[in-house]
Image (tube, rainbow, N blue to C red; front, side, top):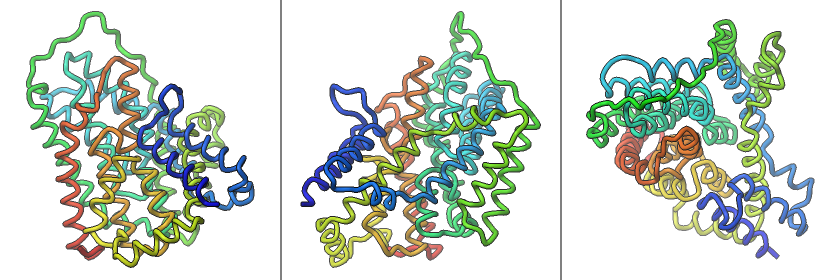
Length: 412
């Protein structure tokens, strides 16, 4: 019967929403893995069926992009950028703008999760050494990373997934999303600068005895190799070659290095995220094969509730992204929505990414920033995040909706 599969599916996505299980030290990846184990043990999913449910091209592309990100990370690029931004001269508002631009620019061409992971502790400690409240700058970091990542198909995991499933063209997507992403960076700065104006205007109080954080020295040649890798990706994405194959070619070339240890580069890959993707593919695939899922699809089609219009996609993107997270939300939507057109997929990528700035649970990047900041003594609470996240998200999503409608990508 389908009831067991449905129960596992529901419990898995409740776990995605809450992020943990009371009394257990288990996170979202662990919850998804336990769900797959339950499906295997029960016989509801076989090993062969499990393999066919996993979208291998998407995982390959995501892995390859993480190798490219590792090249920049091990070359000291993230640390150098974060250190120079945090130690730059000028007013707090100018400093906030630099943080947002750096995070947004890097996230447009690299995975935003990796950018946030690498930059958060350096930005937090650099800001604290200046005697400033790190919270608005951390919000600028993650808000900029999310907004900037919306511009490209390689900026974040959900965009990578949507691009692979829909076969979207890299440059067409950039043309559709670059303008609202850039405007969103401006909104992030204006919203945080206004809402957190008291903290930004407060007189700096440098703490006593706070040692400078050791940074990784910038290896200019290795950084240049990373830039060449990005240029190679752009050329291969324009070629008649599967995107994941082109990305793996670049990743393989980077791993064949005389200076960078392949073990260290592969160790920098976010294997937890890849495992989360693989497990959610299995769980959502099992659910998609149930009678309930088929009935759900038929009911949605009859009532015109598929997210192929802005009127239906806007509330769905906002609600789903801020309950179960935007990556699980996109995987769930795509598991039952079998006939989306390129314009609707572009809208899904843009709106779910921007919706991730609404609440702390909206995206993996948000959680990474909160956890990494806490590890160096800078606390970013749920309320701190929502204070600016709610208004800036509503404004940026309104801009995105207007842009998608005026540009003809989607209709209301």
